[in-house]
Length: 143
Image 1 (cartoon, rainbow, N blue to C red):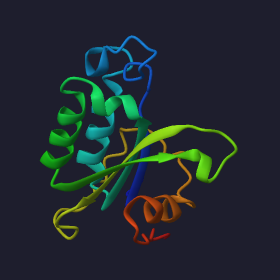
Image 2: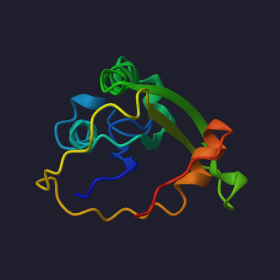
Image 3: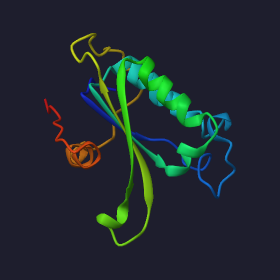
Image 4: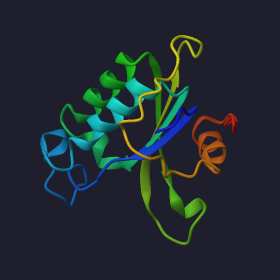
């Protein structure tokens, strides 16, 4: 994965949704994928991180606390908000957005380790999503 300033990611929602199994982070096949995102952030050290999931993550016993603790351990501020897609799309779909900013963006450089895999995420709309969540604009440096 090439170095990057902003990482956007989502992890499977089934373990956290109110109509699902509610296994949370204990779900070995889907819930643990959050920790893969943490691994990528440790290696690549992006300045900002935008995560998305269902709002049920907030009410899972200990799950949201664990997510926040892991993100703060990476040296990031953590903010969250539930946004209803009805403001942008013709459907009612409340989603949890978690925005993190590295507290010291100059500390540490991204690793050049390419063992994570190829990047495939499009970052063209990250600034818009971040602006809606935090009320501020965000920029992505394109090389």
